[in-house]
Image (cartoon, rainbow, N blue to C red; front, side, top):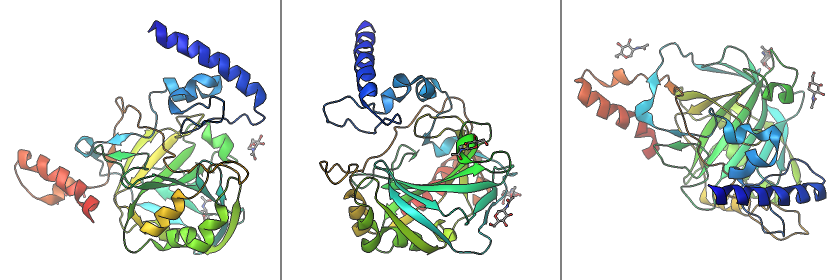
Length: 323
Ligand SMILES: *[C@@H]1O[C@H](CO)[C@@H](O)[C@H](O)[C@H]1NC(C)=O
Ligand SMILES: *[C@@H]1O[C@H](CO)[C@@H](O)[C@H](O)[C@H]1NC(C)=O
Ligand SMILES: *[C@@H]1O[C@H](CO)[C@@H](O)[C@H](O)[C@H]1NC(C)=O
């Protein structure tokens, strides 16, 4: 205990020195970066900036491990409604140094409603998390198991708030749709657009950007109406607990080649050493007493006795993992 606090004080002292030398305040990392200075990794996010203290003390944090045996069937969950106005959209794909991030043009509005939502939420950003090896790289886990990556579609409540920044710190502010990524022979058509060789190599370095047109947001969604939902937080500082998460009950696929291209993205600018962006993942946080709801009706599986049902229920929910 004492040693722990001593270390913290030393780190704090160090941090203050570094902050004064750092022109950009949003200053945090997923991994220890050796550049002669201390960069706070996830376990320190909440300690280095008082505005981020929810990252440490919050009790409704994300991501979490979803234990499928703890899910509750909620018959009142509506299907999710995606509203693109039937239009294709354009956007800019960025290397932010931490994520691959796709932002739609301002005139292209896409929103979702239904599911656990009581408001309409507008798509703000599509963000990719991925691993340096297969079977790691997703932020959420399913029965303790990670996937090779996770697509997060970040939406804000545009009925109550004027922009993402306002919504992110306010009640019912965000809805994040999460879709696991798995490696396969053929890829999801939306991921094909983002991750084909000509495109992804344009954003090799931090701050690189590349314009994409004619995107169909519908294509990123896997073919399922099943989802899992819980109340959590942003998975990056300031870790505000304003996000409703919706995890789609099927993954999307990318090819081995596309995964490889992702791992060749650098966190740094071209003048600096190459540092792969992969493993841009916050570790799972305690669920505490939060409820995980789903629209999967387990009892559709059969009229077995309760014991059997419990076993089947696991199988049923895990089934899509094998696809
Ligand atoms: C959602 O998006 C559609 C298509 O862009 C738009 O027509 C509609 O007005 C939006 N819904 C709300 C509640 O703003
Ligand atoms: C977001 O909206 C708030 C309040 O309307 C405004 O003060 C702020 O400048 C806006 N931020 C951005 C990034 O547009
Ligand atoms: C769930 O499935 C059972 C068995 O098929 C059915 O009786 C019940 O009505 C379903 N519930 C809902 C809300 O769909």
